[in-house]
Image 1 (cartoon, rainbow, N blue to C red):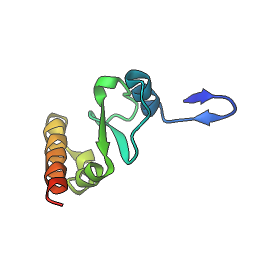
Image 2 (cartoon, rainbow, N blue to C red):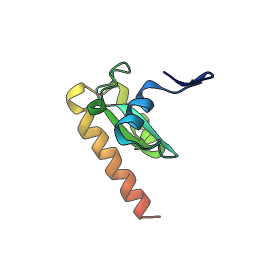
Image 3 (cartoon, rainbow, N blue to C red):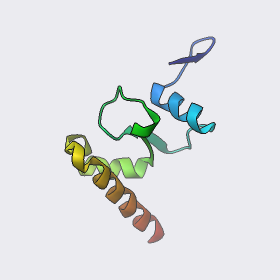
Image 4 (cartoon, one colour):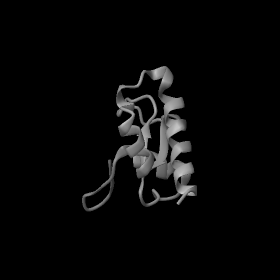
Length: 88
């Protein structure tokens, strides 16, 4: 999405998040589409996660996870990462 002149662009999902929260994207975080559809950028479908959580989701082959299990798998990855952070 073009957000300013001259030629200032950002990902549509990031723009939707920033417009909704009024804050820029935090460093080392990304937005994932909970339902797996990269074209569905409704704020209800976007989840802000750290890059370390994304790494855990890749290990678990999150993109191939059935729709009904995506939210629990995401929550588990976030919990596992929080535990890892606390054990540092």
